[in-house]
Length: 263
Length: 256
Image (cartoon, rainbow over all chains, first blue to last red):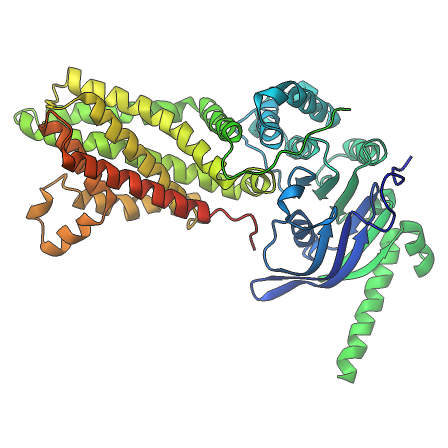
């Protein structure tokens, strides 16, 4: 069951209006407007280099030169009060290779929930996070000695600490085998359903789109669609989200060409 | 399911600082070779130096005391610049700054961890020099240790600061000859600073290592705390704190 009831429906977890990001000479995001509803999994899809990571960094508050409106959990993005409420996983695993899995989690837990009084709660959160990502057998292995997929799961476990309200996951399933990918998507659905968390997950693998409640389709810094997978397929008359995406890309390219010629 | 009470971000939180220091030391513990190199090399160098100047014990006194101040500065500079560079490139810095960690916590945590290591390094080197190699100190060896510790802090501060300008480990290591070598040449190790060309002497007057070495030599030649010693240590401490503040400014929560 989705956990909508406790919050006013009109207040989304993330709301962007005219969101623009400039990196160096390039405008990476151009006037995006969208909202991410509470307690659901929203997929952020598009080819690599289209601005997915930049958009996620803007939501988390680590991206510089963001203009427009971007509200996250009722605060402007980057607000200090959000730092304990957002779990963020970067594309490359950001963990300490020279610490064990448990030592990594112990440290990040101590930053989120410091003090000796919280030690028991921290230990509980660390154990749960290790179980969540199925690394119990590797808890005392150095992160640097793990495989690529295992390291990215350590990185994910860090984001799960402290039960965040919003999880921002940048390509969390890249390089994982099919069984693990299925297990992780099951975990994401559990987190949304049972812990009432909102998930924003990016991917460039279109078959993962079918597992999301809502989709944001991006291309070259612009938003092509903001809809449910079903509505997208219906609207474009396609069988898969991938076909729907290609249809929208062709449409946008054609529209772009008309604009060029009329100019 | 337990709930987490929101923990506010303060400029400096004791438990987050000690957690960071413990984490840095834990990382080092998985790397015993680095610890061994950090602790043993200064001792080996002092040992070598003692017998290089076998015929002139007076020269060993002066150069040995200066080196007791220079070693911790160099080691901490190298270790800190590489460690913070790795923190920046591995994405862990971005992750930490998206968490409720104050920049002061991170810097103080690093200073605390490397300071502990510097105490061990300096205690061994000072002990070896004073009790086994016959370094003739007029003042208290504890004051030598104090200066060594302040020098280590200065090294940590400089390392943290330059790591912001290094894009790779290669560059970070090259900052050593760029930042440290000129100071070694001008700090009075090879010739008293007032013997230098006036221009070089003026430059040496604004380089912090000169005061680190002066402080060591004050302890070497005076039984009590001299005004010059207090001034030297104050300058080293002040510079370290200033550079640490500059280093903190290079840690940005939002990056391009």
